[in-house]
Length: 493
Image (tube, rainbow, N blue to C red; front, side):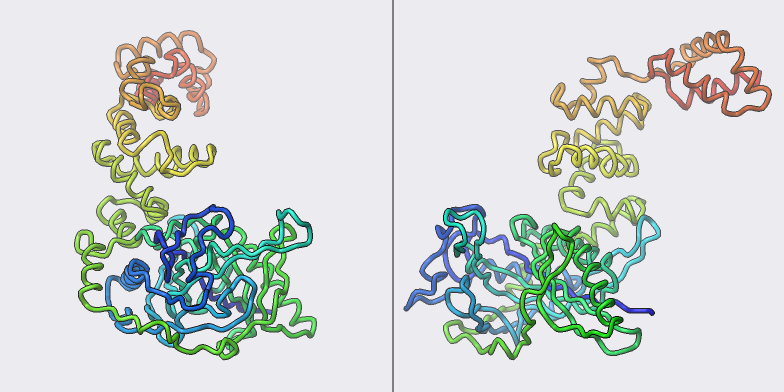
């Protein structure tokens, strides 16, 4: 039986402000419980919320980023409402959010579907993005008294931008691609640090299944997934659960579910509420949020680079058009602003070797970062240093094999990571002198008559053994291309 998967994602993006959305309390991560909760966050009588101006500026930046710099999707007037529900970590008994009039309406995120250069682009439309405050956190483990839960209100009032997509994703892979693309946008424009382990970027996946052409099925919301890998696994499990339930004669119930990574399954938390259950009404303590044209145009001007809004997509297209890189390379280089910056620095110091720089950043550098478990910002080899290494490959000073050896010394911090100093100190310069290489070849041919005879009898593989012997005799320093060319020439003679 054929089923169609329907997925929409709500993403809670913690805005990178130093203070909370309606109070001056700090948003720094890791403080002892309840040390960053002001009287406003605690909802003490007589306190009033005051809007954080920077949070509004970040919302404007996002609206511009997801609409090619067009401004019509940014609301000049939006309203804050009270979302009423009762939970121990919600001290006011309601959450200040936006409902009928959000700050951003519409926009889109382009994702890559498929792998490598055969990937295609799919556009996921956004429904809205609205500002709201975060709730606190209930703690059930690690407390001194067993069986007792605690409440930490440090997160209460932390500014969030909740971004809601249309239900246009049709697989877990597409959902992950969307989440990664959105993560790339918000970190690129600097409104969020993107740290999923600390809860700065959290996804709620709304999943349903239906027969193609039929109305949408009953959805279940998988709440607060904080890794791309878990998002994919959670959706795949939920899809299987719903299909099996329906095919066995059951009925999907609209509910909120939690993903258990240890058991690789989703389980029910509570029945899923509809908007009417929250009894939204305008917050009487907050005036309507008014955004004027000057604010929007000032923000837009700061985001322009070479006449276009500076987002991952515009840089990706620049890498393809102006630097002749493949879609795959460009996609990897724009996974974060740090990678793109590294490429441009490497390109400028490499003598404009775009493809070689991309290969080294996406290959050796990325692999080493992964092995050491560090971010690019902490890399001991920067883009400029890598570019100077690439330059020595391009001008024939180093073979690819020798360059990897030099890179290892650079990573270890030898000679301050300077490729030229390492090459000189370790005598790693490639031998390109034709006379010197011919002398080594003559000696190898004289000592390997069997391989010579096999090659002349038509065994092409025999030449690889001879090349290996030449490279060994030269201690890996002979130019491989010259070795191959000169060796074939002598064998033909």
